[in-house]
Length: 471
Ligand code: NAD
Image (spheres, rainbow, N blue to C red):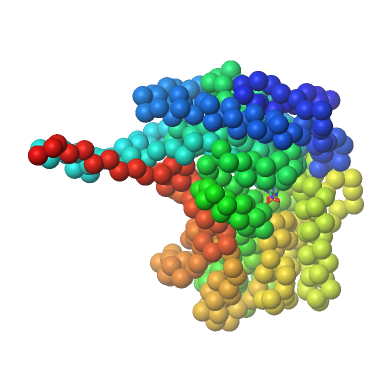
């Protein structure tokens, strides 16, 4: 067992006297101890990022930043297997999906570095020049969740640093090891202080958010934590980007070819055991097709291999942690107690937080399983007779991250997509991601965008320079 995971603070591999155990959710054994950053270490990390900012952000350094970030990509590419295996151990997802998370986050780096947006000349003539510049904030704090820890950490690091910020990143206490490993790999690639990685619980996160030298917070996680962070940022008007939870609806129009789309709907809901912010979490289906859809989805569910992610036959790993397992179990019990029809699936006897994919019908809008983000492998199917009522129900919640519409006629589905209140809507597809797309939620699913050029702009602010000759 490798217990040697360290933080990266001020360019140095750093340990702490206090540690916490990181649990493998498939076996419930301890994989390693991770350090808890002390208040002093947090200050050192922020000070170090603050000191590194002037040099790293200098406009003369754009080429250096690009070549350094490409060197980070190269360095990490040598460790894809190691990071992927560690990700399966601490997160639970199947090894193939874990490695793909690492490769996909690295593959997008060159595209991000190709965005050339640092300054735009709005006017240049005999009167002078009017220029708009995107300038970095300074020290950014990034805080990440446990469902896609590698993808989210790499995305935030690259975007923040490319714009010219320096960064202190804190991973989730459930999945800190891959991020700590990334810090160790990048230690000698990035200049001292440009990237700092500290670990610990939400208390460490809160100390970072409140730190007066931190100028921007990039947060991905739950709505309640997002609100707490926004409130902390209000004190000194720190900039904040919040990528929060959702409760995505899929609307199947009456003509949707159930047999053709069922597999896509299934994996749209159950990939990563349903622990995706944009997983399909409720399906609105015409009453004439409810039974057929439930039967096909339940058949796929019964055939899906749920197990330890290190087993190459596994298609769905465990839930990541006890808090999440108990939450999903409570929604499952509440559905049962409300008289819902449970088609199969359900919890699996331990050890390990395993829960089989579960299809549920006979629940009405208003039930917690439909109205709240359960973030697990249970999928309620809700029948409708009037498409307008289905759209109203899809839009009725106070979140709006993503959603999908399915039909033989993509134009008819597009009309429905236009009426849905979400940051992303997919028509006849799900989890499609264009390399230049931005991502984020409406309503309480978040503030701001990540990804694409709009996402990069969230990591800076605009400055106008008017240069005139004295007449
Ligand atoms: P969480 O809010 O419990 O924790 C996220 C991070 O915040 C962790 O690192 C945690 O230690 C830290 N934290 C907790 N309290 C804090 C505080 N007071 N101050 C500062 N930091 C604090 O979320 P989670 O359970 O790790 O992740 C699941 C949630 O994340 C789901 O709601 C999911 O939808 C959402 N999510 C959203 C996106 C997106 O892009 N919109 C992506 C992935 C996950």
